[in-house]
Image (tube, rainbow, N blue to C red; front, side, top):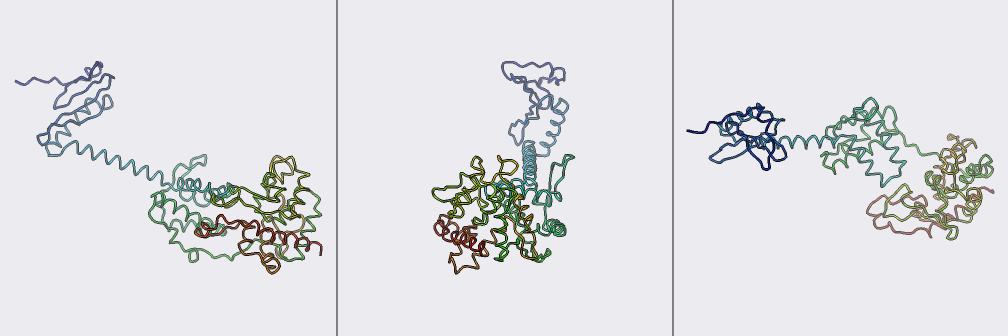
Length: 430
């Protein structure tokens, strides 16, 4: 006569203490509990399927109660009766949970705001901080509000996965932007192209929906408007004389004299450091990482210094020799000058009259230089590449850049800048 099994009780289970080795508390229908030396209590079920003895775990006590363990036992017994292996069902359920977790993780990583911020972080090594900041602000203002949810403090809590954003969705957003700020559509579209290509590289989306958006056919076409610049020699003379006679602040005056001869980008100009100036070698050298194009394969930006530039720097040094910056802030010498300060000075001097060709900003000096050296090509005979290198315009074609990235144009730039400094002196003294 088989031994009668007395079912377990909750009291018996709760009073079960750990021993030196695992031991078993038997219930019924193949259900039992293993009590481990560390006090854990595991439910197990022994069963036979296709003449093979098997064991399956039903969880731990008290998370899985005695009643729940018995209920699972009956459920699994019914499966066995129907010729279904409970272990297979459990494996399928585990795999299903794994897939759901992976899908959740994928959807979490694919949220458009996370993709955008990761893309911006990836670009930070190649673009200036100010450029990254502007891109971030533009995307946060013009794109993300259409796809993200925010908490009461204005932080994004979630956003639409990038693979769920359709071409139509994006076009509608850009059309809103087109109506409000027409000049930013090109920038957003360009950034979205990069964002989607980045998402493709991360296997977060399969198709680049930007490739199917025709800017010409979809959005309003605005006439191209170039940055105003002075190219008339009579007006240029007036500008140069006004700069020489500027009395309000010496630093601003010296900066404007300098940029007339050395057409740096406004950011590089305002952040110019004395350590970049080598008077003995008569050379200006700006580390590549400080330039707009940060390609580590490119050499530092170098420009030879003409006699006129050396004189401007020596005069400037008398005022700012003890500062880090060549052009320190007029209000706080420990900081570099703000680019809007000399722009305001140009306005005060009267050079804000665009209709009459008399508008000039810091950035305009680059256009003035490039336009006039092109006009007087016969006088200096500098090549296209040399004229472009003065402005640090690099070859856009990646293949060409790979072959030419070590080319040294410094010696070829010298005669062009000497001509330019002489030309400015000639204009000023006519």
